[in-house]
Length: 361
Image (tube, rainbow, N blue to C red; front, side, top):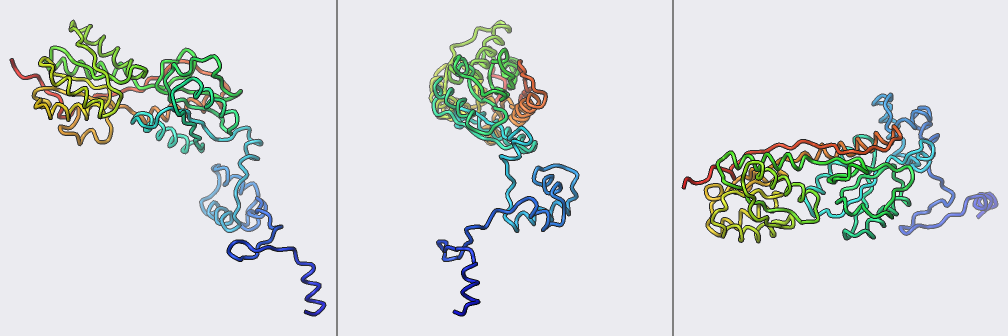
């Protein structure tokens, strides 16, 4: 090696080999917004507008900037952006169970609505429904970069005095009767139940049996109360309540009991999954649906129309519940207010083949 080569070698930054043997410069720095602007031939302000999702940038310019970001490996600094704008553009969602149809579809709707508003969602699952677990989830909010929180959880878990939100974090609760303390978005549980029970009575059934959800569930209790009140208002004596746990298996077990009730000609199930198990049990016991027993569910899951027979059910608009939850927390954030009260999302009865007038005689 001659002197020139030696000199050049001495002035070259130290390098190391990566796992694949490639030489990487330890002093390589991540690309800056100015680097992206130079490569794309635009101003740094334009790069900022593109990275923040603002309007006012032509599609061609947007493509140029995104291509430059990709080529340089540029990633916007979300932490710096949050400090500058005073928000993280992230909504936390605390929920107990993802096993139920309602919670999963509500969470999906929240994530979709948040994304449309330019917000991400951070999920904080609660392992078991205890006060300590809930307190832990709320405590973790203080460590995470979230601007607001949506809680999909039974209200009794929010009762502890030690459950508190980090300062400045707004909250909306879904599926609850906590409207005196929080902003609540809920399906019209009572209205949907009344429509289902009245439909069966109008068909000529003397009374309606109820396959209820778990006792600790607010939604289950609200539906059971409305079932009982609707029968009482119509001058009918409510039969003994039969309880399940939202699962098809619990509906099947309850159905085996109901199949032995000779005067059971109509059943309102608190959700479609339990109605599915109920249909199986009635079939196995030789009780035809709807000729011998009419069945109505609640939820209108996508598969409800493919049950045998297709299930008459109460439709819940989960997408609207999610949209209003996101709309509510964003409004509270932007207006810097704390809201209380309950917003009810309407339901509707979907008539299919599982209900009919009772057999004469």
